[in-house]
Image 1 (cartoon, rainbow, N blue to C red):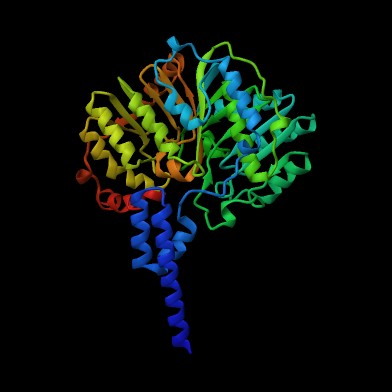
Image 2: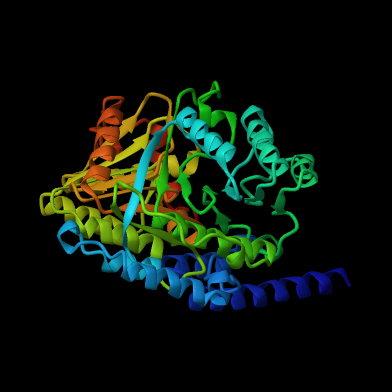
Length: 470
């Protein structure tokens, strides 16, 4: 009897593995991912089947965005953009690839202020919340119940008590440790919560690998924030392990804020099944800086590889330089090729990454890529003054971007991300100044992989095997 049960289990396991392998071959987002899953599932189904259930990352077909119920608003934004088209003489980068990825147009009439590190970021966010008159929309990947998290909680409660509509959203995986009491206190004060533990979504469909990595704050449809910071004391540099936390947010004004607001509405609709479109302000004002800008949101629900294609478009547009700051460097083949090609045609390609270890696997995997791009002339700088977590890039003197997207496969294919792109030499100069200051706290990588310590030499190629899910 026992033998029959074991035989039946093995038979079912192998049948399941074969079915999953067929599904992986049909739906995996890359050929490399398809081959990897098929080999693992067929050769080791005991490990492969459970892993595929939780980590298999075919396209996120179930995602339903508010945009499908709000075509009027989208068309309104596009129509309004017809009256706010950039002056062609101010656009030195072809915006069409970025507009196609964003499904939104570049517009003039925008403003931006870089917020360097946590104190400047949260001082500005808290000041904006205090000044809110109608509503606050807020979303972070990680929210902790520590001193900073409690300060945010208090600010949101104060806003709700003076009659401001407040909506709060976070990610189920990123904020796994956030106590229910934290949310209950917000809710009891009148804050509307999209509780990640209650919502429909990936965690109920064996797809925990998908994360909403966006960090968004919107005040009255007039002021918006996005960038690398989450809500936790370590983002203020108060973690003894990481020390100084180097990160960047951006404060925005103008039409790009309404684009960011639309993305929040989509996420809120998915998480909370509520359409906010008619409850928000979509008119807004223009900023005196009058910058050309676009909000590019990407995610696993997209029909194309929008995350990787955004970086590809930026690299392809570079004529003189592209500098990229990212805490992780685990690119796909297309981005590696684009970086190598840019270096070979004489573009100043610089990759800024942290020297301090945050997550060991992606940190190790990065060393398997450094030699390839350095051989083509790209330069790798390793930040040593604490941990660097910013996500930013600058192209020539014409394009600057700040947001949530890392230079890795997870951000490209598994996470919901967003980047604010400013097609303006003033924005490019601001990011240029910021990154030049960061380079002063770096050393340039000069040793090849065979010259690295043993744990890097041997660990890096192994870590690279997990690149599709890092």
